[in-house]
Image (cartoon, rainbow, N blue to C red; front, side, top):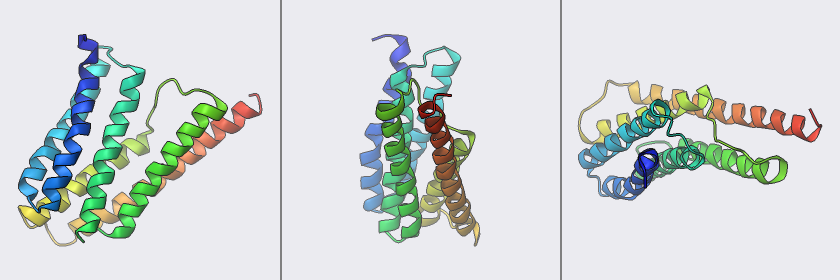
Length: 185
């Protein structure tokens, strides 16, 4: 194990935090869940910073980091929807977007051309930030402080729009790449 492995270990730790976060949320221990979610959020920024700043990027890291994000967000969205805190349709949208992206990426990788490194789009990064903000706001509103009326609804609709936009963007970008590759361009 070397220093280059630190970002990957941080991503693995974030994956391991998913179960306790969901468990705490299911038990309505929102303060503790929020603390662990904050640790997970900080770790997301930290592993990316270390990988880029020190040149510790790796193929494994390009898979682990978004996988950790997807697991954390999908599981928290499903839990919050199950509890009636977030709308079920939004959790379904978040899950479907990620399923489409993963299935599309795997299909492209094995049928068209291997993908060397996963490269998130700007809209996808914005979507992840909005999804994280919505989970934080929902948990804060439920367990710790009462948010201004309308803020949670605004975040729900912004997150829905960005989730849809980023899903469509991935389909268009990777569909175009696949068509160009198949047609020999």
